Amino acid sequence: MNDSENSPAEKHFRKGEAIAPMRHFKRMGRELAMQYLFQCDLAGNDNFSESLENFWIQAEESGEFPSNRIFRKARNYAEKIIAGVYEHEQEIDTVIESFSKKWDIDRMPVVDRNIIRVAIFELEFCPDIPALVSIDEAIEISKDFSSEKSSNFINGILNGVKDSLPPGAKDPPGRKTNGEND
Image (tube, rainbow, N blue to C red; front, side):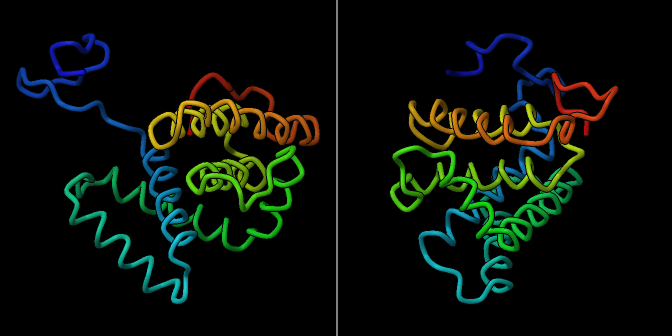
């Protein structure tokens, strides 16, 4: 779709010129974390700090990410997710396996597996993020990075995880769950 086909609500303007919509830093952080985890899943991760630094250099040199406050916040959030997924990888993968009926974790598409890991980290270890936000973000990221059928698969697993959480564990009273409040 070109710029002339976008609705006005889908565009941001700068001096009368249409530009790409701004993404929330947490969305960008989730995408970056998934991409790094995907890369490590395929190539292995012999030297965590070196591979992570190389990833950030590549991200900055790609020109896709503006070198601004939003990117810095996204990077910090991505690093939080990456560290959390690595720290709890065994536990997260056990959760994935228990909710992915008939799908061994090693048979899952690598992109899907890492989108799910990011979302489960948020569901299990980030009580300040509403469960529905984590799930919706994972589904949207899968639409951008994976196949058509992936969003249904990911949604099924993550809804099962959400339903298994203790009542009230994710959505504190008074907190809205229909959008990103953080």
